[in-house]
Image (cartoon, rainbow, N blue to C red):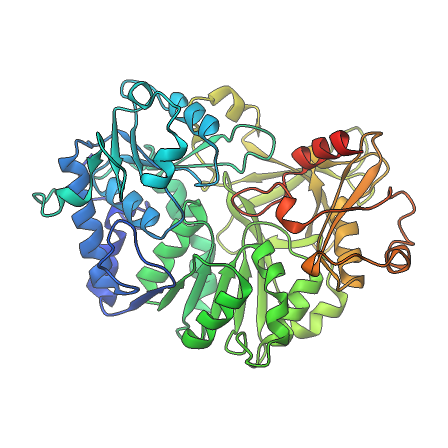
Length: 522
């Protein structure tokens, strides 16, 4: 540790702000919310100020007892300061562990226990989350509890440590743990994904190539969870490239429209389901999406209807929607752009082609038959960007590695042109259904009333469509029957309010949990 690293080989999160400030110190970051850890900072920060804040928070954490090589769990309400606090911990050579604020207390306890080793982790939290953890034996689970804001008595206060002596940055080795995030936990307790400087830097390669194609510097709007590994990649890119950045915490369409009208982004990166929720902005007479040249979604496949409506809402010449397929363990694997002229024939299952400088992808048989659209195989990925391990679960990690290839858990096939088609998660496949996601794409395209549609396995192994409508209005049976005439295998639809869908922090539906709910309900 502590040797000056080769930044072309490794991404060192702790010094990203000060490196960026040296080139682009005046570039602005604009937030739609206040920072819990720095309440006086305001909502418009220069990169130079961000660098000062990150170093100051690192000094405070050091004064609170955090040392290089220790785990610092960041578990607090959603806020951009989660990124700042993790960056500060990384500056000390500590390993930030980012936990979604949506995780319940029992899951947090399980993950804290999994982090036990030579040292128990530090827990960096706030008052509201500490109240949720009130029933846990935190003195047994964590070395210390550090309060960001209003954490209460008996908790070290980060605010009171302002002005702590400066501490120099500490660097890990290229292949040592540098950050830990977690999987979506759609099937149970999430896995803790270990990233290293090498894996994080590798994942930037294809995105650096794509950014180089931009003809001018655009204002970038980022609406992804503050604890997701994707945010750390996105922030590294926009800071080092000096791109003005908008950071959203309020994802409600009305608030988003107001924020975009005031700040006019040229590029938006958001979750697929956020874009789905923002479709209605295309009809807003104020045109809040008119300034957008590029839309980008990295988390999951996206519905063609959503892509079409968003591109139609732009008033820029030749706007593009760039879809990237990947996962927390892999990073970006394949991708492709869509233009207005493409959307009328867009296949939502075609998630893209290998990206320049990115991973190799293959599809291997699940049986003795050749992989095809009717007999999909396992999607596997290979490159240096794959996460190092699952912390505390090496055997579980190794189960996904096959001759050096990482098995993603998705099934699909490749076309003759090389496009990867992702049909379903293996665990979500339903007998007699070629692709649940394909059905969802088609039916959403036919029914504007739907804001979400999820096909899951019902109590008798039949495919049950669970639908959510705008304002929870009832859907006319004749409309549903006409839209689903091509899919006679579907069971009777179940209408749920969108708020009742079990979701992950990245707004993916927890299909296994939804299937269990149907078993209890039907």
